[in-house]
Image 1 (cartoon, rainbow, N blue to C red):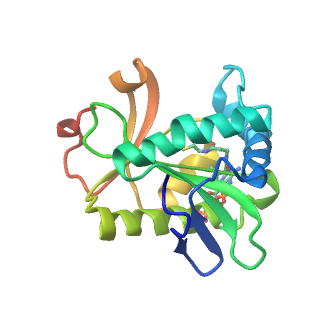
Image 2: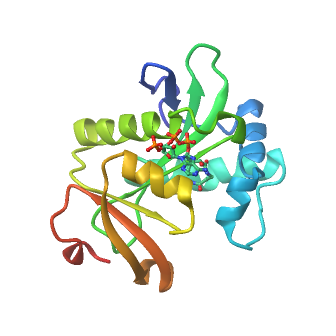
Length: 187
Ligand SMILES: CC(C)(COP(=O)(O)OP(=O)(O)OC[C@H]1O[C@@H](n2cnc3c(N)ncnc32)[C@H](O)[C@@H]1OP(=O)(O)O)[C@@H](O)C(=O)NCCC(=O)NCCS
């Protein structure tokens, strides 16, 4: 089990672990997985996180396992003043790539307030400081304007759209930070 007291704080946000035993976290994930923006990211694949039980299993079997294996993974973003869950921010290890992948998702009503940038900046700084991460990738669909703008705002470097072996040759918009030549980074 990951440290229940772990927190990264920013001026407005608290970043913490998702807890499978917390019903609020499980029902929040069901809501997050059902926003129109999240569903469009699934690109036609069925949404499997439609019940609190499925969310609980996702936290237990995937998120906690990733944290245990890699020392980082998917985190909950909450508003610090009310403790309300509003989104997730993640740093994910992609097999074969030498740097992890930064990602984010927010509930629709909390979008366009600068929260994704604030949370991702804080997670990247934490990873640099505490985990010794020197580089990160950001992958998304080039048609996802919100994600593209968030990567840009984070100061990531645009590397173009590429067919990535790690994503079964799917066209993927690639952003990078902290690497000179992405060709050497396992793409
Ligand atoms: C991508 C996402 C996390 C952005 O969250 P957010 O908190 O609204 O982003 P921010 O408020 O921090 O804004 C970051 C930048 O994106 C821009 N932006 C946000 N939503 C946008 C949209 N729908 N269209 C165009 N630009 C958008 C903002 O204007 C800002 O850029 P700017 O300051 O240069 O104008 C959110 O749209 C989301 O959850 N989408 C669904 C999940 C997803 O696609 N995740 C990406 C996978 S990597």
